[in-house]
Length: 283
Image (cartoon, rainbow, N blue to C red; front, side, top):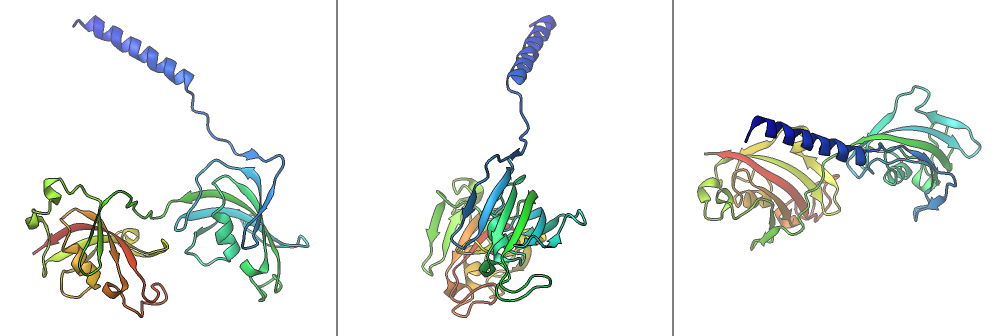
């Protein structure tokens, strides 16, 4: 084909691309003021009114969020505001200790929302006074969700291959077990007792509460396999994985921390869920 023909094709392609781009302009989302705000009430007693509707993501437990807020009593006395310093307040939703009304309310927002919360004492400061806030106070907060940073997301195990061992351990495989490197017959790619394994993990309770994660720390854990340095479910489960393999280990309490648990993070008789990656192992 001649060079001139190639140039012609390129020109036509560029023309089509420009035409397509012109027809499908990406319009940035702009928060909109709600003309007739409606106040909604949750079962906890929290009342919230969306004054401006944003268009960003909604936070979930474990996400880091940054907000501007002004807190008032019902007589309009302002007891606190981030606007005075113009420094947004940041915290990890469901992890950082804040009043229950905040944890519940922020989870109902999207980035860009401006919302007014009316928080009853039961999910505020209750019957105790807190600084300028009298006991049994109803709290009014004007809150704007400025941005969020996603925390860890529990892996979605739906539709994945699952194996249950005689001990009661469940293993959900995220790697394709049909690939040679992850095939059950490829035992050379699997650790045995005494091998030093390197593992990345995130541990959750059944309700999705994250209680520990090497991923958050940015440093995998290393230990000799099969020497009771970790809970029984780990020693058993990791011996059934291949190097580079990812899986979810669902560990009953008798293979984890037993009837007593490990308070305060792990309750008694807790089934634990670990998203794990066998990063490497060595003899």
